Every structure is written in C-alpha cells, then in structure tokens.
Length: 314
Image 1 (tube, rainbow, N blue to C red):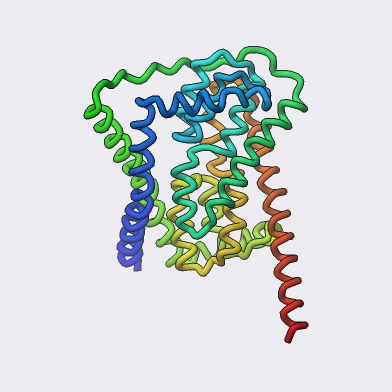
Image 2: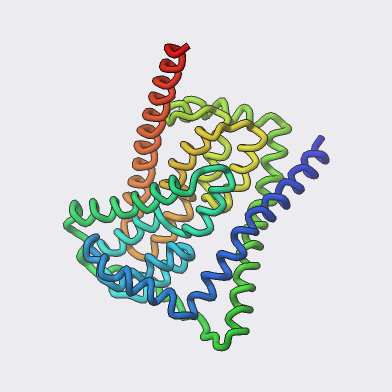
C-alpha cells in the first residue's frame, strides 16, 4: 500500500507543480523584467501621493509595490533602504501581511475555483483598513525602526541579460515550489491512505464548524495557514477535487486564509525590523476569525432564506 501511495503522491505533486508553475513562471518573468523598465517606478510615483492618507511617507510606496508585485522579502529590502519609524514599518508590515504577492497567490487561489474579486477585495480592503485604524489608534512608535542592511542586487544591463535573469528567477520560483509541494503531496497521500487525515479532520471539526465550514475543509485550511497560499494551493486543489470540498467551504476557507496564512514565516521575517510581531500575528488571526464567521453566518442565513422561499413557492 505504501508503494502505491508513494506513486500516487509523486504523480499528484508533479501534476500540481505543473499546474501552479504555469501561473508562477509568466508572472515572475514579467514582474522581474518590469523592475528594469520605467513601469514599476511609474506605478510607485502614482501611488506615492496616497501614502499620507494612511500615515506613511511617499517613498513607502516602494516596499508596498514590491511586496504586492513580488513578495515579502523584496518588500523588506525596500523597507531597509528607507528611513522609517517603528509605527510606519508596522503599518507597512500589517498591510503586506494581508496583501502581498498578489499576482501569483491570486492566480493559484483561482485554481481552486475561488472568484478573483473575492480574493482581491478581502486582501486589499483589509490592508487599507488596517493601515487607517493603526494610524488613528496607535500614538506611539515614533522611534526609528532598526534592521540589518541587505546588499543591493547586482546591476544587470542589456535586454538579453534582463530576460535571462527573469527566466532564471521564474525557474527558481518553480523549483522552490516543487521542493515543497511534491514532498507535501506525497505526505498527504500517505496520510490519506493510512486514514490519519480522517482522524485529523474529526479533531478539527468543532473549530471548522465555528468558522462555518465542514470538517473535510480542514486539510487545505491548515496547509494554507502554515505554508501559505502559493505552497498550500496544491493540497487545496487536490482537496477540492478528491474530498468533495464544496465551493462554498473553499471560498470561506480562502477568506480566512487570505487574511491569515503562512503565519510562522510571514511573522518571523519582520523581527529584524524591530517592530512588535506578536500584535502583528494576533491582529491577523483575530481579523481572519471574525471576518470568516461573519461571512459564513451571512452566507448560511441567505441559503436558509432561499430554501424557505423555494419551499413556499412549491
């Protein structure tokens, strides 16, 4: 049985890597190349005047654009190149915790059947709302933030060299994905065949019910919470196909996960900046729980009303 599980897990991992790679490769290539064109600076200059509305200086647009177009590591490099206070860095970190790597993570999320407008509305909306609230509520954090300087990227000249760099970065992204996704899918398949996932789902059933989801959504939920949307999407896609996770439960799970995912990595990487990371984690977690419960309640209530109306019409 283990041999069959390994074969199925490897095939599933390769299939998922191929599926997600078709999203990651072009997005990474395009965004990497755009860094060496006037496009990204233009977008940054366009956004800069809006920064004051959320308590940030104009050049804070740099890490926000880098974080949303690329990832948190690019954003942190941008933060460390600026003179920012602890409060300003905390606002940026909070915004990027909700909204980062939008192109790739939104692309792989759509593979599970979740609507793009849902993903973008929740992520961008929470990012802007959190910035406004923190700016109005927190009166401290005026001291300068600290961090370890990151060396500048090597200068690349010439169209051919830039394209080659973009291709290398794109393949590197797929490679990093494969290193995580294939062993993960293999482990999931073995745990399925050994009935461990069934026991795990039952243990999580009370919490899933509180959030308005069925127990069979527990595995994609926990995977996204710990590994993130991009890496966890493989398990989510497989769960949606094989475990009969409903579109409703998958959407509710993603509403939680777009607000709070990859909680370990996304929290720890901000420690070198000298900001309070525990509030960062707690705000994300509490926001995700409250938002998910509200959406699930409204959705379930609407379904009940529609069912009653259908019965009356009959």
